[in-house]
Amino acid sequence: MKRIFTSYTSLFFAIFLVTGMEAFSQATIGFYARHRPDDATLNAPAYRQAWGGSLEIMSPNLRTGNGIQWMLGGSLNIMHAGRERVDVNPEVLDELDEHWVVNNLQFGIDGISRFMAPSSWRVQPYVDFMAGLGVFAVEEVLQYNDVESDCETYDGRVATANWKLQTGAGLGMMIQVTDGVNIDLRGTYAPTRNVRHANLESVEIQDFNLQYDMMRSTLNPWTFHVGVQMRIEDIDCAPGRGEISEAENWEE
Image 1 (tube, rainbow, N blue to C red):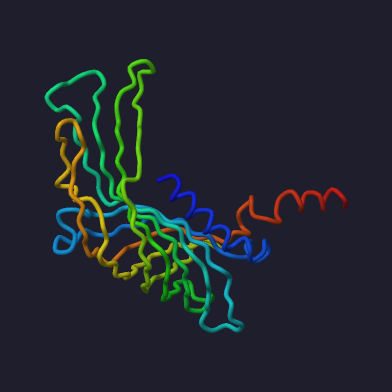
Image 2 (cartoon, rainbow, N blue to C red):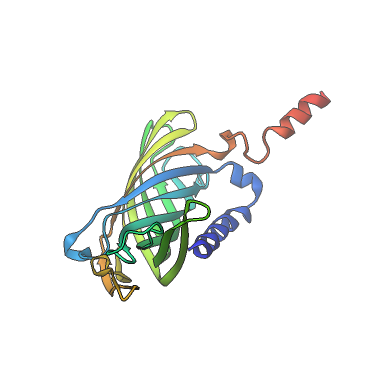
């Protein structure tokens, strides 16, 4: 799981760094909570309600004038779609307390093209068009108490992962709180079919071995987002701020 997350993170930031540090500092950055509701018709008995978060970076307005704004950007996201825990030996309660946890996970990186109402509006509705790559993974984690160190130990691995190209669209509303800080509310629609994942209701221990069924599902296409967006140049650690300005003042 760490390898997948590291690869996605590196790719995400590389895309923006190659555009130049000056353009990067003029962009906006957003931090979001994400939720995909459960759909019993599509997802039972496996993929459950998904919760997660995302990091989003958007360019400044690429159009001139005071009309509709156009921005390009991308998002890096991770979601957790249910877990099931079973004891290795449910008939014996020992100090090791060994148990397996099976997680359904989702990672994604998306490119975004956004059209938004003029910047002079305090409440700015917008529409997004997205395309990207998602990976749906099943993680197996063995958890137990380490008697010597008296702490819980984890030993996990990604049992399977399948990659999916994803496209979708979204509608949102940017609400200005202060100059440079906004509350962002959004709903996105991105159909994802034939996703291979663990059937969480089938997780069990047989002869001290972890067993569960794999299945394929069409996921609920709707995801809802709430977050905070701000200009990168307003952050103290943004490129071109802080130390440079202090040096200039010293020379004066």
